[in-house]
Amino acid sequence: MPDERAPQQERSLARRAAILESAASIFDRVGYGTASLSQIATEAGLGQGLLYFYFRTKEAMALAVIQEQNERTFAVMGQHADPDSPFSTLVRASRGIGELLLSDAVVRAGIRLSLEQGVFAEPTSEFYDQWIQGVVNAFAAARDVGEITNSITPERLGANVVAYFTGVQLVSNVRTGRTDLMDSLNTMWSVLVDALVTPENRDRLRAVVTDTFEGSARHEVPVASDAVT
Image (cartoon, rainbow, N blue to C red):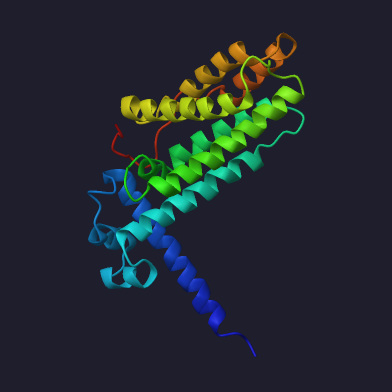
């Protein structure tokens, strides 16, 4: 006999995903503190009471957004993995994450929520620890294949380059709504190539940066979001 529960489970999962996207859209536009369950329900086209079936509190929704943002962001590194050139992996993954910031409200909202203090401090700290470790591993691999010098340890590079990327996208958001994000990332990686890459790899990796960001100087953000300061 067919499992009658399967369509119901699929509908339930689809509805939960729709609520999560709607919550992210509101968090992205107005921030966690200003967002209300009634706004989220209206955005989702559902009655407010139905939200409680999936998320008991606004905090639970926000934590789910952060978790989903983490998963989408981490997936980008694997999509752009280049075992022969770990430095290229980092360059192209940053482009992929930049594209998510321009097109995906869940990713934008998760990043915005991660900057808010209090209940989000622990999950955000875990996210950054994982993100930094992934970048550390990539820099360690780049060092091992001779792409970068030994002047700065992979551990220090990972922590600081993640902070560099975060600062670049935040300032881009404040100044231009991220319309200049790709151009700013192009500049960031150009600086890092000159500072870190070994002479014999410098021209090749400069070309990787150029190829990755060429023609991406300006983008329109699909969903407007308030600047985060």
